[in-house]
Image (cartoon, rainbow, N blue to C red; front, side):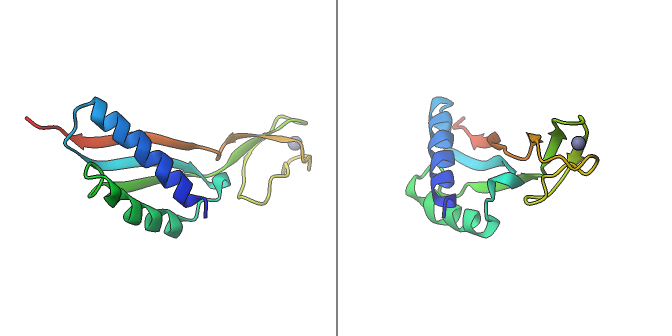
Length: 117
Ligand SMILES: [Zn+2]
């Protein structure tokens, strides 16, 4: 379950950023996750609920996930196309030589924090 490692990394990064900003708590963290990362949403939420309590800064933080649908460009004919996790072949010329444009994201987009007055 690589969601545990993912959540661990996100929490560490969020906590460090919040400390530097002098936050008293983190309200929410917005994450952008590409479908190609094969993140299981239920596992992600489960790991988040379990691990956020380890630090008072994140104890009540909400995880917001933006899912990014994959898109690739064909290296043979240059066509751009949307696809799912399994169908990467170019629909125009049938080539399997493609390069991902999006769908591999794994980024913290932003976070909402509360600071003492
Ligand atoms: Zn093509």
